[in-house]
Image 1 (spheres, rainbow, N blue to C red):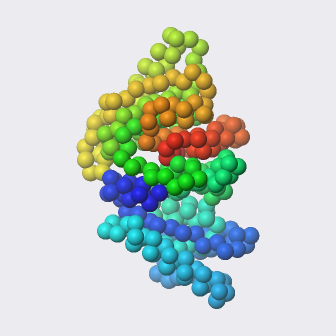
Image 2: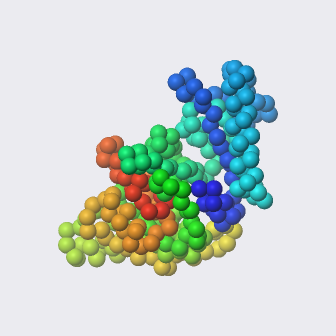
Image 3: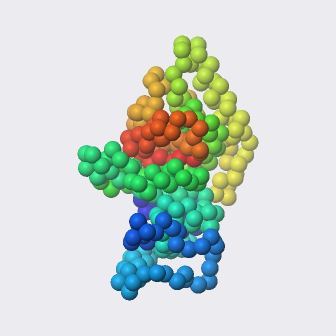
Length: 282
């Protein structure tokens, strides 16, 4: 995961915030344990015992060591905040005016592989920030080992296709990547499929028309864009298509889904669990 963070920061000339939420007593601390100020010159007074303060200092020391090991020579800051992890992530992202949250998600064992971590699930549901989740596998995997050459985008899931188009355009421009737009609602016949594919491509071109600035460079609308209309409904078809396309990144609209909670979020969780590559939800 650290390699992906470094790659992204270098590609987009970004500053990294390495964050750890210290929550030793989750049943009591629903944090963040600090007020709503986004900056403070003083450390807040913490209601911890000496042992917990020592544990917190040790955690901060480990975080500093990790940061120096993986992000030496880059612009980064280290923060350890107190409270519920998901709420801390939201609070710090808002304070830092964050463009992207990146976090790992690992399935451990045949059963736990089917579940997302509670923090990941809560951040997915509660925050409005774009969220990058790593490949959901028991073993550690190297995300973006060769950059991002192939991007798959799921469109038609909800009302956030425009955000998906813009994000795909941004990454395609930064990485000179191919883009495959997957429509996730099965049409009735061949004529409908062709018309739908043309309409999706037209919408992509309209949303991304003109020059844009990416990492300080002027980029054109990604030209190597094609549309696939899936033969079956999502979500596993999206993951199968990602395998077939050799995708390095899957982009999915998240926003505040207006559909049935159970259906919409189970689809999103399945995509993240089964995807062969990182998933970026916007």
